[in-house]
Length: 121
Picture 1 (cartoon, helix red, strand yellow):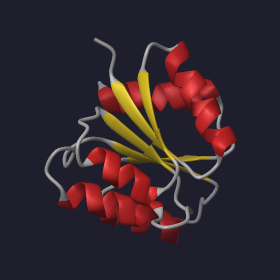
Picture 2: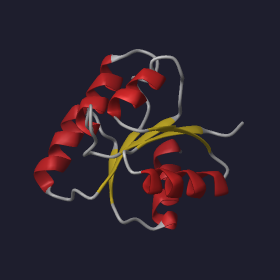
Picture 3: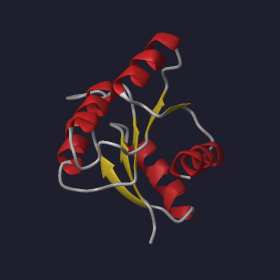
Picture 4: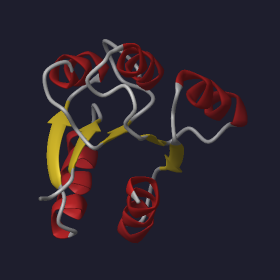
C-alpha cells in the first residue's frame, strides 16, 4: 500500500508540483491550503508524513507542527518543512517545534524524494 503524505502550502502551484512529484514516485497525497486546514484534516486522517510550508495564513508551519505534535493520531509522524526560509533561527524554531527535516524552496524533485525516502525509511 502506498504511503500517504500531506502537503500543506498556501501556494497552489507548489502544492501541485509536490503532489505531481509524489504521485510520480508512488505516494498518495492529501493537500491542505494552510496550517488550520491541515490540522483539521490531520485530526481525522492518519498520514505517514507531513510536508509543510512555514509562512501560511491562518496558521503557520510552526503552529501546525506544534498542533500535530500535541495531538494523538499523527503525533509521531515525520514532518518536513518545505519553505523559502533558510535562516538558522527559523530552522531552530522548526526543530524545537518538532520538525524532522527542512527543504529550502525552490527544490528539485529528486531532492524532495530523497528526503522522503530517508525519513520514511
